[in-house]
Amino acid sequence: MISVHHAVDAGAARELSALRAEFYRCLPRRADALFELTDAVLCTDGPVRSVAVLSLVGEHRRGHGSGDAALARGRVNINRLRTALTAVSLPRAADGRLVLAVDVTCWLRPEAHTCSQRILCHT
Image (cartoon, rainbow, N blue to C red; front, top):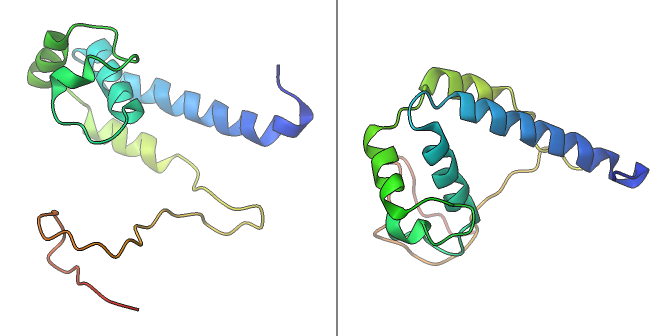
């Protein structure tokens, strides 16, 4: 049941549901397994160390071998996915400003993969 107070949440839920459906349509091969693997990656606690570990996450209802097979033989229609992602509205605050996530930690991570143009800037 959706109350008047949750009308904004309902719109966001509809948009998320539509994005999930379109993402599923972007998977022409091994769609079910890739979709569950994606859910498992998004719902797991902490870093993902292996595909087999993802099979232990509740959202992944298949055996660990299906994840390996999906990654080896599955396909993603990148152009369709790109179009789907650009159609998603940008997150905004109540006053209309964009809401973006930024990593503001001061921990040095020399092993992290970064762009060559990225620099460390103390403020």
